[in-house]
Image (tube, rainbow, N blue to C red):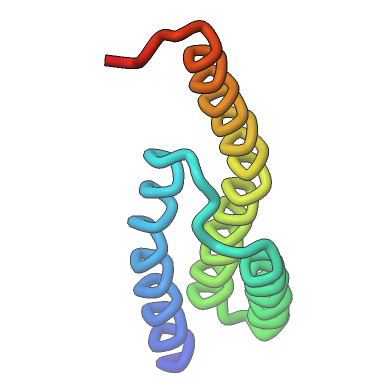
Length: 107
């Protein structure tokens, strides 16, 4: 069916559009997408991929399932790096104040 290929190609294009976002998230160690956005989009894509599997639109279903995985990776980044950023910020601030107390400056 031609519709399977059209919808599948669009899904793959969306996936390739997300790849730089995923790479950047790992490089800067930050979640760059909000939790509700990534969670709901990932779940929505998963449901849509299951629906397309039941219609035997395999190419589309696989592309949308891959897209759901990409959104779940973005969700993972947001959850994982949210806490890392807080800890690193606290360490930096505490170290700065310790240096001020001791009369040392960072050079």
